View 1 (cartoon, chains in turn red, brown):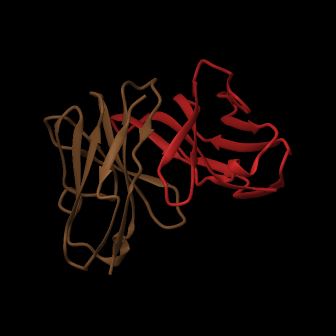
View 2 (tube, chains in turn cyan, blue):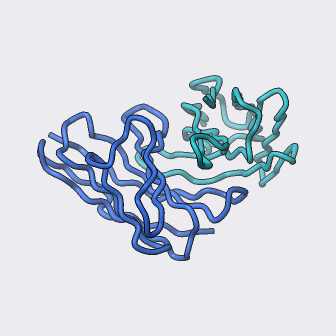
Length: 114
Length: 114
């Protein structure tokens, strides 16, 4: 059974700092990995999607890496801003129980202080 | 990308009643899913909504409690039946075109059961 772990559970940083969020998964047989952002009381916003054959994806100040063999991904946020404050969720798509599923970690709650 | 709307956005219901949540997508999609997010927790997949056939439920979720319909490729409903306070959660509709595609989420329905 696929399990996704995110470390740390919470992170507080001063504005302008670069930071890294970590995600690990137990079964390396994945189709892809997706990073999401969730603001309090809201739905999920997709940030980056990395296919299993890819090593990294970049969007603006965000860079996500994937090491499928070791079961790890990182989300790097450069020059953090207060508007980056949110919960960041990592999810892997894999095949289980006869269909493809997206399995989520519990998230990292990020607070960027002005 | 897919734009997803859900109705209602929130509701407060009495124990023992049922609520039907609607999910509408602005384009035809292959895969539609329903997730639950309990307070302070990550997302748990309830079921995959299959067009024209019975939904595929995850372990711990049953059709009698969470009946799902998907009459076409752009619309689905989830009913939460015979509700109890433990059903208080955010319910999210999600879609994807193919296994390798980004998975998108609706804004969620915040349900409180008294």
